[in-house]
Amino acid sequence: MFGFWNTWKALSARGIMGINRRNADYVLKYNDRRLYPLVDDKIITKERALAAGLRVPELYGVISTEKQISRLDELIGGRDDFVIKPAQGAGGDGILVIADRFEEHYRTVSGRLVSRADLEHQISSILTGLYSLGGHRDRALIEYRVKPDPIFRAISYEGVPDIRIIVLMGYPIMAMLRLPTRQSGGKANLHQGAIGVGVDLSTGVTLRGTWLNKIIRKHPDTTHAVDGVQLPYWDGFMQLAAGCYELCGLGYIGVDMVLDEAQGPLILELNARPGLNIQIANDCGLTHRTEAVERHLLELAQHGTSQTPEERVRFTQTLFGHVSP
Image 1 (spheres, rainbow, N blue to C red):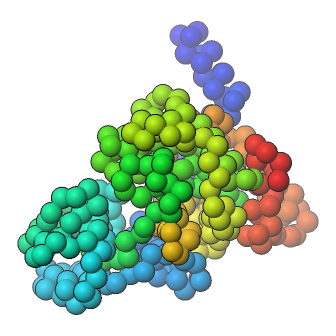
Image 2 (image 1 turned 180 degrees about the vertical axis):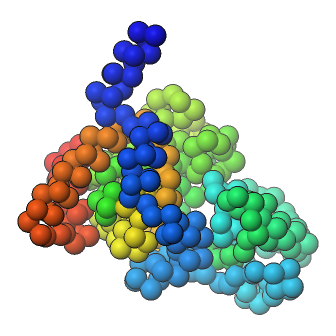
């Protein structure tokens, strides 16, 4: 009993946030459930992002019914590469990434050949709700395939690395780079074996990594160091993340973004219930940072003022960066 109590006190002193506190003090407090569809449905998120002038992967089309599957060729438009994904999927499940074509077949990023019938079956499974939150009927997106920036070639295995930034009331408070591995099947999903790497908010330089609950410095597949990597366009990522508060109206979110070799930073999706492994990757608790932002918001309210996304980014970079800007 005393061992548990001492562990809890030690974690609390470091500002480590547990799931109960996340839910009670942040998700329930700052996220109006009526707004959840804005982030749970990737189509709605994409439409609102475009309306707000935020960059997202191009949407080629949406398939909502079995009958519309026959329009697949029309939506693909002769392209050799594209992505099929569920509008309400989670954790990367149900996503099929096509890299090119081989005669009458399509080749996935892992090199597997699939037929047109396979594509239709995948879309049909998406429509039935097989991959959706709650198992409800879903829609299938056909969209642009992100090509990762060359900087990730040495520290990622297949797939597309992504960057998650936790945002409280428009203030980016912690960031993590998620790197696919052989074990994760090329997906940037920590629960399936991807690597989480902390990122310094002020500079965009990667810190240490965590993989399968172990601290690492090198990618297990490429053996290259995952720490000390300067992420390009870092201020662009921070600005995108900060602007997502106005985009969805939710106060506590995870913003998932990618770095495309041609188009730069793009928003992939928003999460109203972001996980807590980001604390391990950064060797830092979220609570001290959330409390600092809440105190700052109270001071602004007392003076009747607010801040722009750019000002919010500067505030958190100065306060939470490992290296002063």
